Length: 276
Ligand SMILES: O=C(O)CCC(=O)C(=O)O
Image 1 (tube, helix red, strand yellow):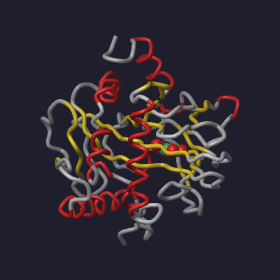
Image 2 (cartoon, rainbow, N blue to C red; image 1 turned 90 degrees about the horizontal axis):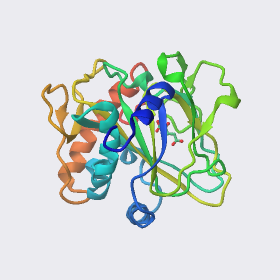
Image 3 (cartoon, rainbow, N blue to C red; image 1 turned 60 degrees about the vertical axis):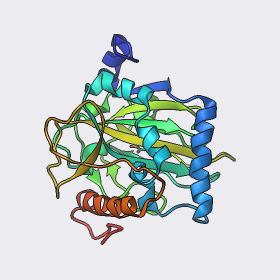
């Protein structure tokens, strides 16, 4: 038995590559985080620039609080162990009746990490349903890396519009339906994606990428991460500080520097980096 997950649930995660749902915030807490996110949007007059939607736990105290949520960390620790880094975080939002989608892919493909032991924790801040384009997974596909084709297609929310080269049997696909405050966990190699939002509601998802401290970045410049639990006995990543106030100019500069470095890894071999 782990701190949150039962032994059977941990075993099932290892076999299937995902776990869902887990309530980590009350509906009221989720509404509070959504309100903070939407206040940020209003302050910039609409959707924030895409690069700020990534690693925004370095820019906002409330986003930092989310990646440090003890209930989330307890569940992640049950699978990855007690020493945890946040490698990245990201908002994945779809507006009502938006055609935006996420093609079938495996997260590990372009991340350059030394091992496939990353776990993503996807928290819904608005209902995530088949109608609003919830995340979908293909259970059991996390055992091997498949090749991907970059498309850079408009409307595809992935950095390279990458598509996993495999036939997905739709009868095997599982919809990860979440209510605000619920979370799903997925393995870095599981094939997953999501369709357009056909509903009248926004879909707002905040995903955090957790890794154990022994992992290394093997594909690019020295990488950085935030220590959120336990200790880092390896020093493979430059440790990032926590923001003490929102949009502190020093943290905005740090965010730009670390995002530029990470973009060199994610966009390697292309000229598509937003920082090029
Ligand atoms: O939010 C989505 O629909 C997809 C998210 C995703 O691909 C991920 O978190 O790895």
